[in-house]
Length: 419
Image 1 (tube, helix red, strand yellow):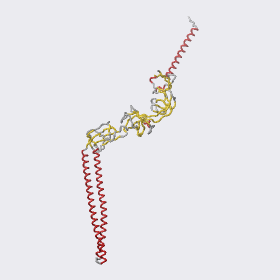
Image 2 (spheres, one colour):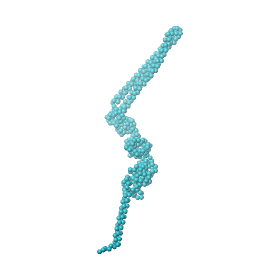
Image 3 (cartoon, one colour):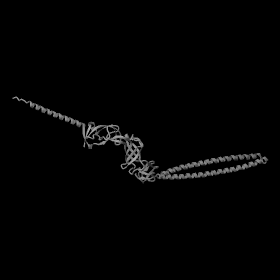
């Protein structure tokens, strides 16, 4: 038997199928929208991110470094002669004055050398005295010879004058008179020669004394050197400070010039700071610096920049004031902040992780009205310690996430901030 279908029933079946298809389509669209929204945004916890606010104002460009305090005045003490360490009086860390004895050395041979030099010096002095006496005796002999020759000349002069009158009277022959005249002339020449010899003799005596005095001076110098070496066996500090290093041991044999100790000043200190090479170019002599001893902060000034780069760092010397706190002492490890410049009225933010100066970076900017953060590109400028200048991409009071989120920046343009 044939069944006749009702048109009303067929219409109802078609209507149900249409509603089911519509529902499926709506569900698919909802799933698609949800997936797109999930791909464009990610939720993060507020406790898992670092947030910083953009600021505006003056900012000091600083360079941070590390190093230690060193004595501005140092003195290295070495041996003046071969010796053996007999006694150690002071040890490293001891405060010393100029007359403080650090170690005592001994060298018996040096003592013998000093005694020999003293004896030789005494012999040279005795020879000098004898030379002076001999010179005086020769001078006296010359004076006596001159006096005798002068007396003979005066006698010859009287004879010649007397015979001159007798020759006119014919009492004395002309020959005898001429002999008297000749004798007078010869005595005059001999007196002149004696005077010249006397002057030469005085010059010879003077030069011989000078030679002997020079020998005396040389021997005195040799004695002074040996005495200085002998006195140097008692090693003294030479100035007030602290004994930083002692390089000898009891009973040790020392060669000439070998190091004994290193001394350094206690109050006159400098700071030797190492800074990164890429930041050293902004440091110049005369800039201010702050030295942190972890108990006190000391103001200083840059006085020297080492031209040599070592381990990608440059050494900076910073002078310190005379009056230093008790925490400052030689070889103390310190931190330093060098103030290179002051940037006037700039926009800046705390430097995000792995960000370099004069570069571009993408950060998430928090929306104050919603709990979301949108990705924004910032153009950065100069770095000032923990902060960095923002040239464009942000305004004062904007809030950014500065945590390192490299994976999210590449795939997600919006973050949802959960409490």
